[in-house]
Image 1 (cartoon, rainbow, N blue to C red):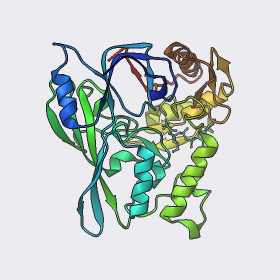
Image 2 (cartoon, rainbow, N blue to C red; image 1 turned 90 degrees about the vertical axis):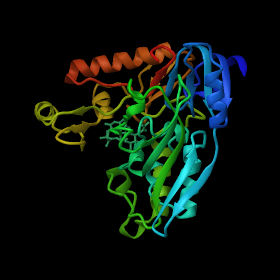
Image 3 (cartoon, protein in one colour; image 1 turned 180 degrees about the vertical axis):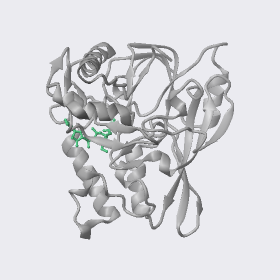
Amino acid sequence: MTAGADLTGLNTLQLHATAQHLVTVISVDQLRAEIAALEEGAVPHVLGGGSNVILCDHLPGTTLLMAMKGREVLSEDGTQVVIRVGAGESWHDFVVWCHHQGFHGLANLALIPGSVGGAPIQNIGAYGVEVAERIEAVHVVHRHTGERACLSRDDCEFRYRDSLFKHSAGVQWIITEVDFVLDREAVVEANYPSLRTRLSEAELTHDAVLAAVISIRRERLPDPVITPNVGSFFKNPVISQQDIDILRQNFPEIPVYPASGDAVKISAAWLIDQLGWRGEERDGVKVSDDHALVLEGCGARSAAPWLALAEDIAGSVKEAYDVSLELEPRVIGATE
Ligand code: EPU
């Protein structure tokens, strides 16, 4: 255990946060022992890859850094394979490893920063694929009691950038391992417009999709190793058909994508961009020059300026379009 640990290198916003006690967790048994050893009523904070969190300045009590490794093929029948992966594995390394093994279905999610254990929480998605489609089960430990459970895909209540783990019914579960179901012969998924335009008919292969996704991301999204960021800072709002009909009367060019049921998803980047936010810089945080949905750090070292700029952006979107923006990263330390 490290007392008064600096978390700067453990979050991609590079915030100068500290944890009162930081424990690196490498096994389920160790995790349960750490929980059992906590003082009565104490609840640990949990940190994975740190790529989708906004850390408050000081995390009191114990923070568990999930570093459980391991990739185990559980079953393989010639068409499908089920793989159990430790929460602490790097997401991108896992995607590339699957590709080289000939296990398909995740190429569109290449280069998303973070760990395997973080992927189900926000149901990571990109270029027409959401990770939920490939999750068979999520193994968890209860952060108060240490109880173990295995949640099915349905139990996880996956939605667009959302899952059980973000809500009161599931926030107490700590993800330890994820089971993925992948295909030997998966169909290439290349319908997302910016991906499709990169690929010719001859190139509709898993290799080409992986390469194209990596190159699009490198061009459009800042590398968190160099520039502090968490990718998209807001979710794309999901609104009713009735509301989009009204919005379109004034803003006919607004990009719209299908969502579940009767709802539609609209482009938050477009809404923000139209209001002139791209390139705006305040107190060490900047709206990316390349993508209006991405905020970049240029000196800010605490959560406050990030949240302040986000609040101003969301306020202006609400005023202009009567649409509410929700934060995509999770704030850790204040509201848990
Ligand atoms: N657009 C603008 N201005 C910009 C950027 C984009 O107007 O500065 C408009 C364009 O019309 C563009 C549309 O927004 O066609 C959509 O842009 P993009 O394809 O980049 O997708 P996005 O909806 O902004 C989502 C995910 C990304 C993911 C991409 C690609 C969310 C919150 N974000 O962004 O995920 O990489 O689609 O599938 O759903 C992340 O979650 O951190 C992330 C980067």
